[in-house]
Length: 106
Image 1 (cartoon, rainbow, N blue to C red):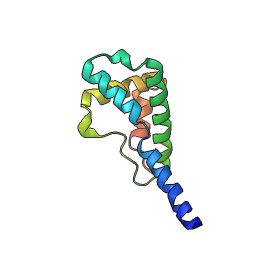
Image 2 (tube, rainbow, N blue to C red):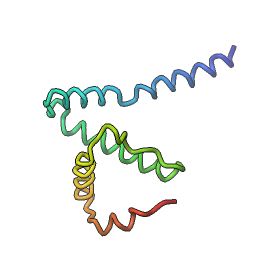
Image 3 (tube, rainbow, N blue to C red):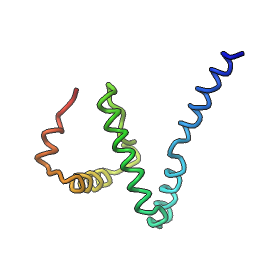
Image 4 (cartoon, rainbow, N blue to C red):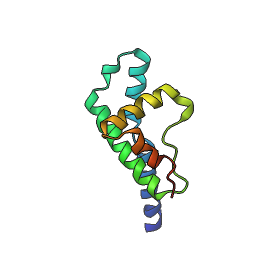
């Protein structure tokens, strides 16, 4: 009987992980569809992006191959450049700094 309980716990954890971020994604998709970008407060977006960036960086350092950072079929090149450019500026980096890391692989 304990074996079934042991198997149920990981299944419950997997279920919780599957829904991780679903509320934010739904809110973002609604904001994008309606054009009401303020429906997702700036502070919430900052917290989500900060956590996602930190987790992605940690996984990239650990995992081979690295996970995809986003679904390329769901964003435009402009979306990527606008976001990355603001991230570079916010972090106090410049393109020379980035060029040193660009070709870096484990």
